[in-house]
Length: 415
Image 1 (tube, rainbow, N blue to C red):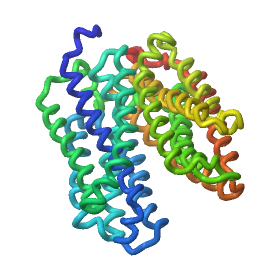
Image 2 (cartoon, rainbow, N blue to C red):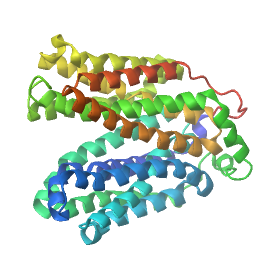
Image 3 (cartoon, one colour):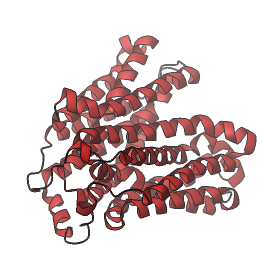
């Protein structure tokens, strides 16, 4: 299908997805800088507060992603996203009423996670349904960047809002951004049909057998390993690096919290730029060779993540910053490249389920990363082993990516 067959309305779709994903990032991270104030309100310790605010959300995002892929294939984009955005926004609105108790906060965060899960996981389906193959990498890259930007905004704006109006109001306002996404998807429901509407409409009408074939494909499992590895690397390194930079020797580099915050802000920006650039890189530099693109981006991620252990790097703030910029830039690439591979190599009618299952399962990689990194830090008192673990997982992602080949079983799998 030529580019001319895809309506300009696809850019509205992209904008709506970016707003929803931005809101998801804000809602995800919002409680973390406010955990002290939330702890006082709930009357429980910081550990219990962090668990109540983050674990239900993270768990239900994973479940929502896995279930959401099937739901969007069955119900369509409009109804699924309207329901998801409505659930996340309503739960945010109820935080000042119900979220000031431990049980209420757990319930609201779990429901928000369930609503947010399908948003990021539906990227491959939306890209395949609305965009020509050369533009699907751009779609995935911008969605990945939107999530990172939302997290950054949440970390900065949350404390500012809370200092004036209290932490429940901060969580409410981030939900209001999801309310904007809700209105955009209501508008989506009245827009034109996608170019692939007839194809994706087959979902649930004979395509279950087609989906079952996926589990026998090496490409599916290798892509899952790559995305799982990226989730581990990203979450593990993001959690480790600020402390490694800030805390005094011998555990850390002793540069202090302000320097750590500044460098990590630049690192996050580089990650977003890497996500956005991934589509152009895979098409223009690697000529559509997804396996090579994933291999190289993971390999360079491993190199620059490991570089912070070298004295010549970690004793020079400028060189350290440059290496972290490069680590963030290349770390931003494997995920959108992998999801673009799904969009371009599976039938449109099952991309929602394939992408949702891949993203949903991969989220557990981040959970394991936090546990493994924390245990290694606790056991050794140093960041060295924790960072080495991240580097090893990046190498595993590179090896998995290098082995990915387009599944030939789908005669109509290519867009």
